[in-house]
Amino acid sequence: MLPLKRHQQILRHLQQTGSIRSLDLAALLGVSHETVRKDLAFLHEAGELERTHGGAVLPMGSARAGLPLPERAAFHHEAKLAIAAAAVQLVPPRAVIFLDASSTVLRMAEALPYDIPLTVITNAHHVVVALAKRPNINLISTGGTYEDRSCAYTGVVAEDSIRRYLVSLAFLGVDGLDARHGAMDINPGHALLKERLLGNVEKAVVLADHSKLGVTSSHIFARPDQIHQVVTDPQADSARISELRGAGMDVIVASE
Image 1 (cartoon, rainbow, N blue to C red):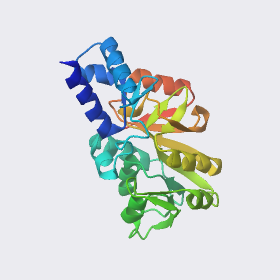
Image 2 (tube, one colour; image 1 turned 30 degrees about the vertical axis):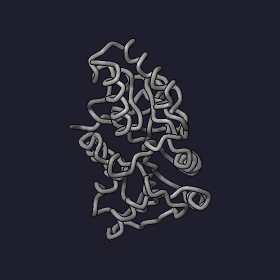
Image 3 (tube, one colour; image 1 turned 135 degrees about the horizontal axis):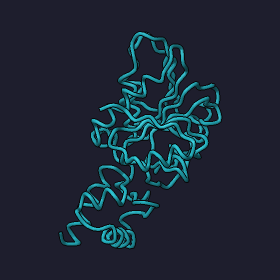
Image 4 (cartoon, rainbow, N blue to C red; image 1 turned 120 degrees about the vertical axis):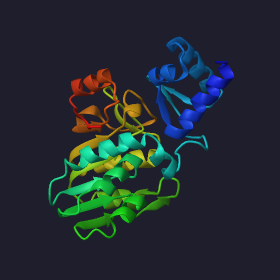
């Protein structure tokens, strides 16, 4: 494959996912890791992406960064459904839970049971829509500054709102998760909100499909020792899972 076509394929994949691992790129393109390294270096110099440990992410200044929710929700759809099914099993009756604005957490919101009482706090407009007519759920929206692309509320009002609650379980999506840095988000507003939230959370649970493991992104919101559990899908690399467990995280691999 010619370099130009490889570069186009790399950028097309990044437009869909926001981040990618070098190992996955090598398999996707059928080339060596050295070729991938050179391709990523070229695209980094061209301002098309940002290099990370183990891969690349879209630059925040790019119009492609932070894909609209429908596009994010469509990618790795089956993996997200499996993760959602496993995540809802962690929720006990009468729990106070926080659901963020990630596409994987949206799938979890849709999978929440109808027969147990819950309090759900969220900064995600799409989660509010999904749960608004559930009689078993006491639904609280943070409010705040609305971001159309992510269908989320952020900013001072949202951050002040979450400080008012003690949360049993926070279910958080990521753009990258690794054993050294912890959980990361490409959106600074989302990262700051989640960082503030962790001060009031008894247990933080990260929902991350296989494409997010071993990838770093621009804004860290949770250190490894702040993450109690990780739920991922069966395609996750076993070495990455071992690294996360070695850093003290309880990793749950969802069933297919």
